[in-house]
Length: 239
Image 1 (tube, rainbow, N blue to C red):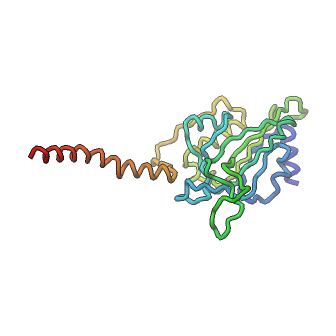
Image 2 (cartoon, rainbow, N blue to C red):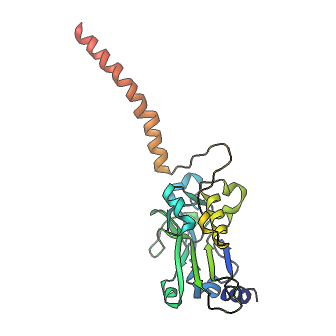
Image 3 (cartoon, helix red, strand yellow):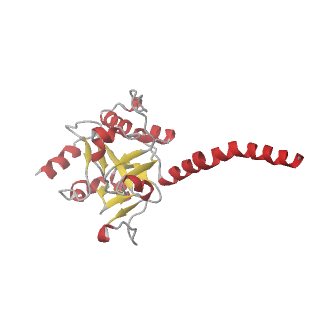
């Protein structure tokens, strides 16, 4: 009954935000398949954030939709603690639906479907660099008893990032504020929002951590050591 009501709501120009987790309690494709959106199998594994737990998905690829355009331009990452892959069916475009990929992971991430013995390893057939969030919308200007001129559905494969701790990570807060604004036809104001003064955090991947360590512990000390070494060698040469 709930699934029927959701489909009916969208059919008359409704707007729906869905935040789901891996292995949802209902068949997502039965409700949203005609909209071209569904959840894939498994959960996203991202080895670039192994120090924070490999099932943390780092959103680093952004689409051109106004909801995420500013995040992409500012190169702000979004963080999803436990995300399922979101899939887009391009065939829905031929039925009057417009589809937009919002957030995708990096090239090293994949959708893990078989974690044998708790070991995360990409197997053949598992989706690489999956999407975390996508949007589908349809013109309803000709629909009678419509709720709005354009029905909109956003599917996000994670809900944990909505917690207080999750909203403080990267661009998560801006992402959700822009989503809510887009659902209320407030798209001209979609932007990055100024944060209140808090303890500063820096989010680094494993490779960025290694590069920073190389710079601070090796290259910077060497920069100051080399002039002293040159002076010492020259003085010995004068003796």
